[in-house]
Image (cartoon, rainbow, N blue to C red):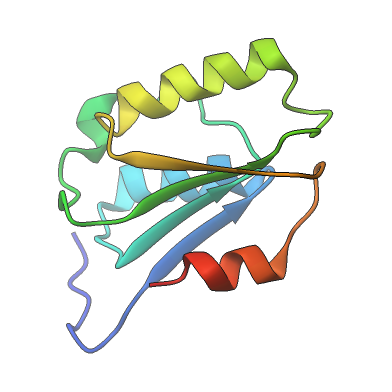
Length: 113
């Protein structure tokens, strides 16, 4: 595991297909970020809860998505929510917004801690 200096606040943000890249990176490198934002994307099938057990319980994890995102239809959204619950043991907070598959910078600013 990489050691991040305490003075650094590493925020891992994955948008769309970047969600799978970000979560695989975390799972394989075991980096402990200050905050994790998973935005409008899918979680890889191969990842397991034990891949993320190393994370501090204090690490904020956000799952952001548009209620009208054509890539997250109701069935897919339910599957992603189940995976999210399983991977992060219920510690991820969902942040749906009124919109589609779009990046809302103002929403990111609100979620930054």
